[in-house]
Image (cartoon, rainbow, N blue to C red):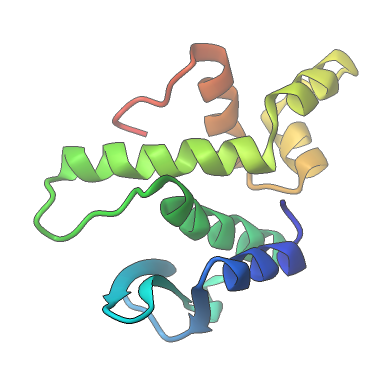
Length: 145
């Protein structure tokens, strides 16, 4: 599930309203809400001014959807360490969707070893690729990621 169209379809099928808005403190946010009649639903709001390429939009949208998929939400009452742990839960799911371990291993076996090469191959940011490589090599993401 990586193409933008598929992500938007996934959002629609899972009661996620995706919209754009000017944001000051983050490029995107996910909001969980509840309605007595309809149950849970979600909003993903992102600032298109902070996105330069379609791959960035895909990365951002999948990250926000990952919060929903794994139930990784926090509020301003959570301390920094708790927020990082929650972000890492979402990040692991995002990595597993965009950069499956078996495909990454195949790419490395074909000679792609540099993070920037692999990032280009998978059409993700080098930062996300480096996190994925760390995750798959170590089996976890540190709290400080």
